[in-house]
Length: 223
Image (cartoon, rainbow, N blue to C red; front, top):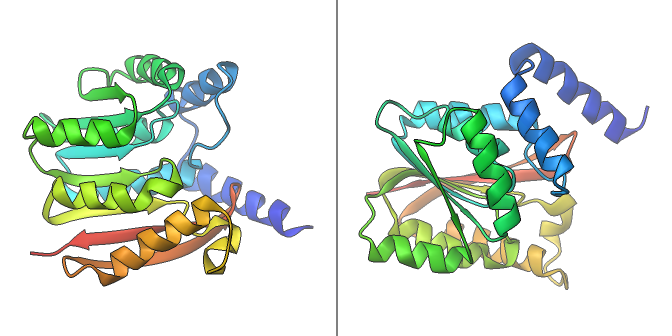
């Protein structure tokens, strides 16, 4: 058995045991595939992790960068308490359209706001609106802009908020200081900023599974 086959098999076992079949979530994946969206949504057990982190955080306001078809959005939004709100930012209008339909099917359209356009513009607009601080930020968008997204996340959060960065291992590419991959360099700058920032305490974890070899960072905003 090859490594990838083994990793996928373990993911399938864990998912069946701890994140069992859910028609709403499976429909979101089916509709995303039918619309031609790339198959880059988080794995089910990773979605469950996001859900549990949001619950543990007691997050009433969640910000997501990178909606895709709304699969991770559903996991996060289901953790919201009554009166909670999730804002998710998506560059591609077609992706946002699919996500809105998936969120409506999940009964979450009233507690979610899918905003389209460049995330940096949407983040600036949130600041201009005087948005209340977010309790959790999930960054899963274009990796080259991760450092700038972190800067905005710090502006839009509060002491005690959680900032999660997805896809930070890049199949191990993150260790290549001289990589010519813009995504790798963006992630490396993001992680260095996270490590150096006096208002953050953080870690990063590499993962293997059905999505291959990758990982995520987890940072808490300090007082």
